[in-house]
Image 1 (cartoon, protein in one colour):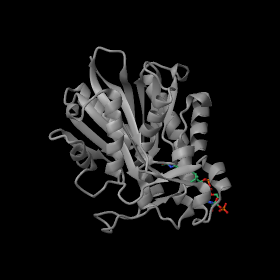
Image 2 (tube, protein in one colour):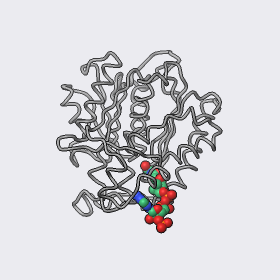
Image 3 (tube, protein in one colour):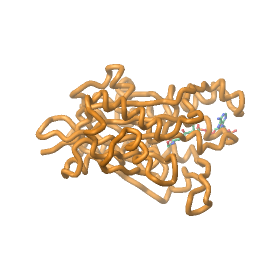
Image 4 (tube, rainbow, N blue to C red):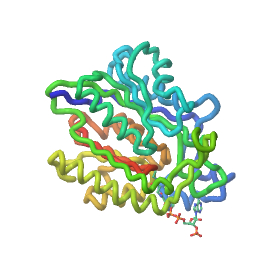
Length: 319
Ligand code: UT7
């Protein structure tokens, strides 16, 4: 039996780190409001020359080094992003060229904050069916470029960054992606969206969100999909070593963990440092927890995310 195993992780953040206090100089908000409602204290914002592909490429280089792999070993690149460098070509092909890879499969996946979970299931399926052996799966975003900086209800919540994993085929091992499950419900399109696009306005548009409604759906959907993944793979919450959630709001992370009966210490939290980096948030948080020694080989890890669409999903991984 072939399984897809995570053999390396990497991440990248823009140079500029912005505190809530700095933001409050130009936005009608306060550090107290942001921390109390979201847990966010800092975010990194892309400067001139920093793009989704440049952050993705840096994250990939670190993931390749961690896996002990050369870019020439890669036969599949999937970038999950809602903020591609250009409408086309796919950001994955820009990353491919930057890494000096002449020929491989390369494409983007658009599922907003759940994008990394979607990309992971696609890569896992391609590896298990023999269509790829060594993949780079990336979540990378520059949401600062689609924020309305006059809308305090959204602009304080997001940040830029990238996370990447190397995912490799392994025969008959215990490790790898054990099970993953994805969902979408397009009836909720208008609760979290961008008010522009190539085929409608011909512009890029700005992010719009009805935060309170999104919050309500997020807690219910995330707890349900985690339970679904654990039950399908024959585990319970007590078996889980770590949850690596999408980092939208510390209160969502706490409420979801409580719903599942998981102690807060098992939940990796980076939203305080990075804010919501959309598709980048899960691989970014995973890389932080791998590098600081919390997530170790053999650990049972749940990855989960929910975002615009709505889309949501979870994956159970023996690391
Ligand atoms: O990644 C995709 C998934 N996204 C999410 O999961 C986001 C989910 N939603 C949330 O995280 C929360 O709903 C928010 C953080 C967006 C908002 O928190 P909330 O507790 O739901 O606040 P609210 O929207 O109900 O707003 C409460 C008050 C309002 O004032 P009034 O009407 O009560 O007088 C807002 O105008 O807070 C006000 N407010 C702010 N005040 C200071 C909204 N934004 C700000 C701000 N600074 N930045």
